[in-house]
Amino acid sequence: MIILSKYKLIPDKVNGNKRRVKSEEKSICPICLSEALKVIGSRNRSAINSKGENLIIVIRRLKCRFCKKIHHELPDILVPYKRYLSKCIEAILDGQGDRISCENSSIYRLNQWFKGIGIHIKRSLASTATRMNVKIKSGGEPILKAIKAYVGEAPGWLARVVRIVINTNNWVHTRYAFMA
Image (cartoon, rainbow, N blue to C red; front, top):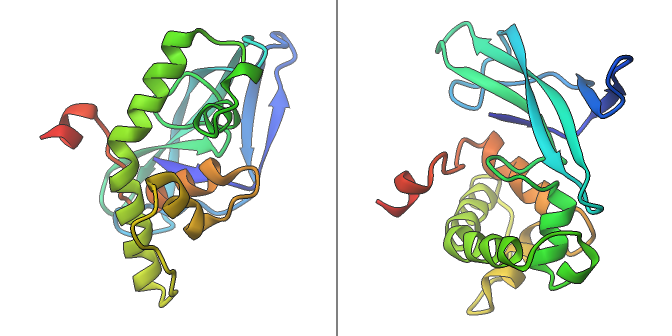
């Protein structure tokens, strides 16, 4: 997976609910750091916005010519393996779930997901900061506050977190791999 922050969502002429992602940045393989990525196709990815509407986003599939791994190029409005847009998940994690059109069970599951993966995300951000010689003070504060110390508290913090963790190849791809 590769997360983009510079892109355009181009509406489909036939289906107004479908958007195609047009990258405005050079994608780099998070495994071998090569820029030699070849487009091998695309696929539809659905996501639910804050109004409860289903959006279909067409994402590119890329294959690295060196390590032969296949990556999906996701815009930063998506969180891998989650059904809601990142700003919706961010609002839920910030305790503003009443602004989002979703069921209480979805809010509960997203909070549980973050509770389970939060420590991994915090440690991945700390590792990345150390490699870049960035000093961040984080002590025994709650996980969410510690994560925001790395990426800032401004809106869009979850998109920034996901971009850093995925593009440094630290994202946990399956729940079972994370729990093992």
